[in-house]
Amino acid sequence: MKQTRRGTAVTTPTARVTAARLAIREARPRRRTSILLWAAQIALAALFVSVAVPKLTGSHQAVQEFGLIGAGQWLRYFVGTAELAGAIGLLTPWLAGLAAAGLAADMAGASIINATVLRNTTFGSLVWLTVPLCGGCALLAYGRRRQIKGLAAAIGRYGRPTGPGLTGSHQPSPGDAGTGIIP
Picture 1 (cartoon, one colour):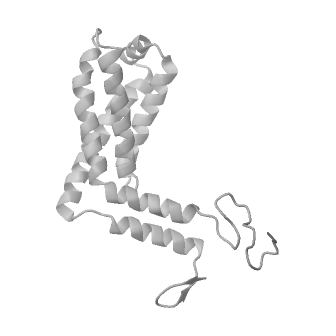
Picture 2: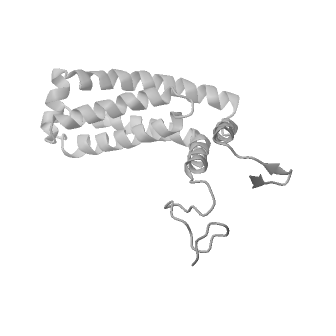
């Protein structure tokens, strides 16, 4: 039970999930901003799917590019999977901000690799594509910042242990009343 200003409330897992959904819903931007963000999210999702599929299917160009990087083909699968997951996340309302932040980090890494490791190859010029994509994803994540905060708060509320005497490490605290633990 939780004491509030209006009275005593019983907190159940279902109530926590409902409260989390309400917190995320309250973090939604205004209508015009929301429409612009969704248009950008759909366009970026389509772009990232079209970029991720060749990496996952093993197209000759993707294999050659990641071969020049020198980290092995596992990186190609990892990046392709991350980009595909990010594209799916952009189309998921409650994950869109987090997905945009992840894709911004992915494009930052791609920009660094293109500017340093691949600079003298035909793939080095892709830096002019990855830098604006990084900026676009970062702006999208910024536009969804309240949603990211709401998601983090919901996870924080839902992920905490419950019950008397439980701390973050799930260990009883010395001196907790009624638990029988003596300091």
